[in-house]
Amino acid sequence: MRLIKTIPHPLWKIDVFHNQANYLLQISAGSVQIAYKFARSVCSPEQITEMVKDPDFIKSSQHALEQLLQNQARAMPTQIWDDEEII
Image 1 (cartoon, rainbow, N blue to C red):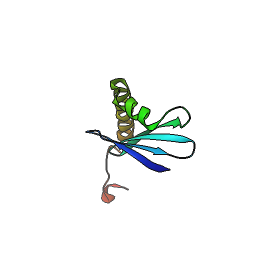
Image 2 (cartoon, one colour):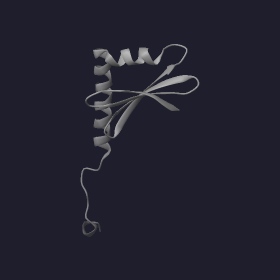
Image 3 (tube, rainbow, N blue to C red):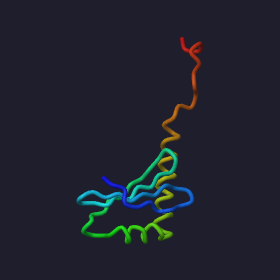
């Protein structure tokens, strides 16, 4: 998989990768990321860049990232135990 483009964004790291059959759009926000896969026969990197500029796509991606962050927060322990407290 090779990086072919980084799309500037004020909050996220957005990269476009490719291999022989697909493009991969990867959006990273802190410790979470989402990825979208597109067949190279169906779209081009320019089309992916235009799609990223669409406000509906950004809103949908933001919602997905927020859900991942919430799930990650729920999975973290709510209380940290000291060694002395464990019997």
